[in-house]
Image (cartoon, rainbow, N blue to C red):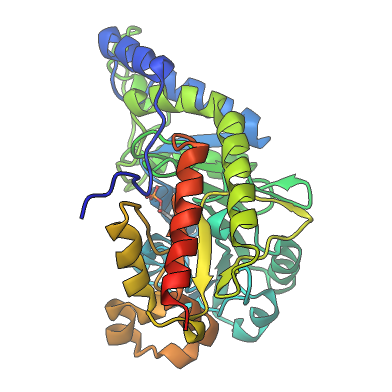
Length: 385
Ligand SMILES: Cc1ncc(COP(=O)(O)O)c(C=O)c1O
């Protein structure tokens, strides 16, 4: 099998190459002026007060939770339809992830089912703006206020997302974004945690670099050595200037990239509108979608193959595909440690068996998108019952 249309390819231009080269020849490779420039441009883009650049989105989620110092065993509500990172940070803080099933059609955490999972030990909600579509932040924030919960947005998919005109990154206590290789913009590996809270921002700065005082990154700089102080036991999850050099230019292209993906999504929507064996996801009119992932859900009862056979057939045709996601409660770790069963989260279980993610990125051409549509349509005809 040879995949000639990969599931994802980053689009790195001349500008990124030149900026990285400039950083390499500057002699300053770790967190420094380029990281600062990227942080400033990013907080302008989101419209928030503070943006702290990290080596991943996971690190941002982790800092947001760790800084609160919640007692072991306290609970955090999130969705099963997510990447392990979202709940790993809860587990690593020795807290308990409490999963709430998703909504049919959008695959977002079901806002109607959150309240029944809130207990006296619930401390936070981590909504995941899945695929780039925002969660119902009105309901989530109302519940958070009523029960005094923290809201930490997992915006790994949602750089460009708006909920009712409000940019993601301005609705929770903190928000974490990802610049992992396949994200809407990339720094190779990287993330950004944002907040409007001055104290939190100060703590994140310290926590990302061993708990040493905030400007410690300057300690070998041109202004000469100055003493630094350790304030806490911190992490090592700062972004380097090499990664930030890529981010500075990727961010400038974010709207252009989105426009291209939006066009491809419209092509996919048209291509699959009259295929009854396929379900495409619902997008709410009152929100701006970041179009990070395009998902089709197979109506398996109308087909002679299961999802994995369909994935194989796509790949045999040379087209890269993926699955976002097989839900957390179906993963061996959760089955073994929490005794989870498919019927605990029936909607997430059902979609986990029948979703397929198709390629969606600016580096592909309209002809590539047409090829994906034709291949899906042909396979559906071939496997139709
Ligand atoms: C929903 C979600 N949350 C968090 C992450 C973690 O992002 P990172 O790899 O930048 O830590 C990912 C990564 O793919 C993700 O998809």
